[in-house]
Length: 246
Image 1 (spheres, rainbow, N blue to C red):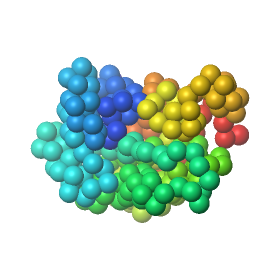
Image 2 (cartoon, rainbow, N blue to C red):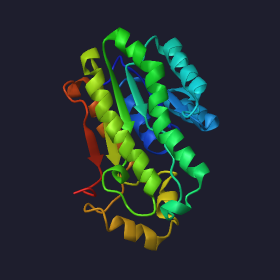
Image 3 (spheres, helix red, strand yellow):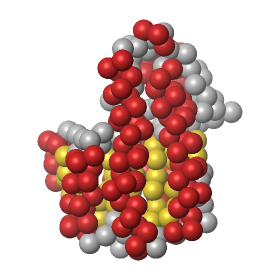
């Protein structure tokens, strides 16, 4: 029960890595808000696991503020925030990605981190403590062609993590990031362009340990970084990638 007595918001928690993180947090004793743009999925997952569901559009300031207020009302405080919600554009030459897709990627992957910080950091500062975890990607560390603007958004998240960590350290707030390689999530087929045995084999060949990241892998890593065991760890962007970025 490494998170006993703690409260958390996990965005994009109805499926994929977010669900893995939320499941592990709950198993370790935390109270967890299952926040997702898929409201029905959030309610179903929360009913199954014991979390608190909330439908949120992380790219919208009012929606994010409502989410934080709902969490404060439900829990009394928020100790942990996991910015996991994310989207990608389909693989394409950088100049062929539409402006609409570009704006969506940066609104969901980047602006959301600003919006959750704006809404929640004042409460964490008042408490004198808190842990924020941003889910970036190996794409932001070792980018691949044809996912240019997605790569850039995840690189932004890693830089934002470090700058947030430096600024918030004196307030007792730690900020870290996870950089997973692709996994069995709703985004996998989008990363690959098409989900075929041949494409999977090609993708897996770039990972020395020979497998994708799993929601369970992410849950274990997130639990450590958000627990008191990592009390002196901040500004770390940890790869959970089977050696992909070496």
